[in-house]
Image (cartoon, rainbow, N blue to C red; front, side, top):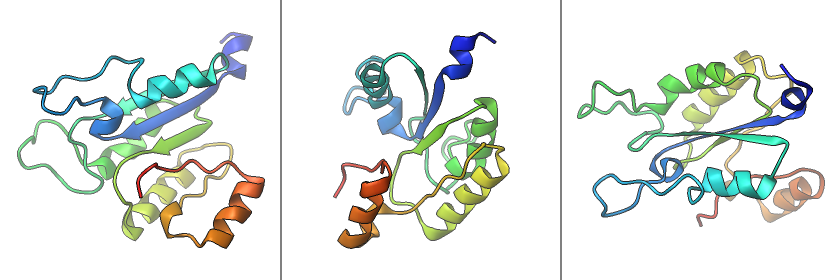
Length: 148
């Protein structure tokens, strides 16, 4: 491994059709890589960062898809494997819909068992008080959704 690779920060973007780049009403077509949000983020971050796009059209948070049994779309079942396949990771962004408490606990467990060399805090930012949000933003970088 070169010195450049060891200094590079690896960011995993794990999500559903939004991460995959689905174009609505276009019969399953997807936006080009530079237009999808992980690609835009990679361009904005520049050198020194490797943004790994792990989007899957139709991925759910915790539910099996009986209409597509050949493709595992249950995000909870694949998250650990995806993390392992892209090690080492410096950051994982899990994009998708509102995360249930059960899901959050499962993700935290997976992160704890993943071997990442640091702790990752996961919470539903939208449910925090304004006072707590200000405290977090004062000392940390909060990655949050633009959804309201």
